[in-house]
Length: 278
Length: 325
Image 1 (tube, rainbow over the protein chains, first blue to last red):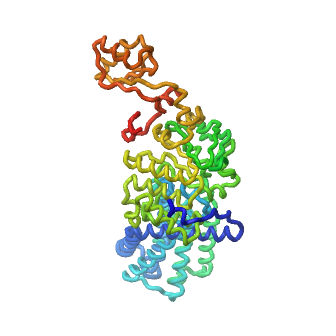
Image 2 (tube, chains in turn green, yellow):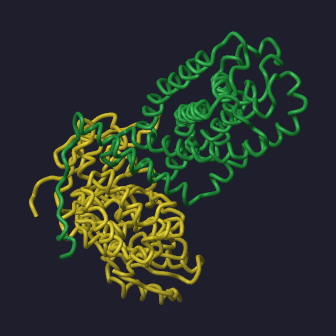
Image 3 (cartoon, rainbow over the protein chains, first blue to last red):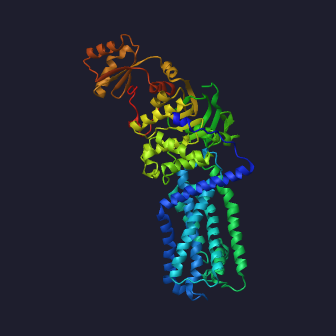
């Protein structure tokens, strides 16, 4: 094989120090690109990720909106949209679980384990690709929101800051659901296992209705769980403060505390699970 | 070839719960040779490969690849090995070329060498025409070839193939065997596992027969066959009744082994095959076929383990014993 012999290369050295960090980043970028190619070849993922929240917008806006709006000081659609953004990234995070479970089942993770790549790269590449997907879905759903009458009450910077917070929240949730995907190791099961985690977070929250209407025993959870806190912060950033007594900054800090806390807790768990996954 | 040792496995143990997957396995593989781990499903072959490829830590014992310990120097081992597991681990959404590029990238190959190397491998594994198609459109054989190509991208000096031809049809299998032989001719050290005795016989310079997490025999294929030390006379009768009658007619020649309509006798019976025919003729019986053949590894396996090598459900893909030799 004369052609084979024409391309020589030597075995690289093990990465140390800064080279190791740089290597971890370039590995993560390679995996991120891989997942984006996959996303591009399955456009239906974006379509359905967009369709689901749009249907929720229509249902809540036109079916439940009349009943709910009586407790509010702002038009229901303006209250609703920040909640939809948060709900959407919670549902979207399930795809992190599904994607990792699929890689585990197909043997891809086994191959990656045998390669000299960073142990965090597969997870970083998956979560950042899911962040990219969320970015597009958030834009599409905002457009749908504007069409059905959603209006920003603050300014464009507040809106963009709110979007940033939504995306960061989605990114943090990806790490949570990464642990689910690696634990179950099968895409269908990952989907089924994710739902019981997602449903209470999304519905027992201030995403769609004011917490004040909920029974007393549920309220402490509903008020302080991450979806509610993030939805309140995003709402404060986009349509201004609707609750007297708490400033926008307080909401934002609380939301940031939640999402940083989620990453700090779940990222190491996910990486440890990844190491032992195959 | 140098005579250095590429792979050392010493007293390797691994348990999964109560199941002892490896119960103290020892073997060594010389550089530039093909070593076959042969055994039935559940014998511990895949566990051994997973430990050697740093995917799984061992419970006890030692495993080294090119002088590096698979636990302490895992990253150095990973820089020197290629692995293709039992299930073609390729991304179905990526094209063949993209799959190879991804592996080259994370295997830390220099960027400018990745694509030429990918194209070279695609050509060699006859995937050039499919190079820009997502792997989900590939046939099983193509996917397996892409998987093995992925293991080769970084030109690793040591290669691990876990049941490389399981699930392939006869044609793809023969093609893959030819490709594996080419690789080894270039000096790659190869450890392969197989439950196809034929495959180990064809490809491996040395074979370790593994059963129940232990190596129960080791040697060259001819050494293992020599353990049986004799050829085999194999008769095929029209039906089981005839086979049963033939067994009785031949009882003076030792104890024939009866297996459905097939009878097997040692090749060194007094009078040999002629005496067998004469005895059958005397009983008014006529075999459909009579064959004198060298002992196959099937025979060796049966003798060593007391049970047959289990085959997967894809048994029809197996080369008939004694054929295609």
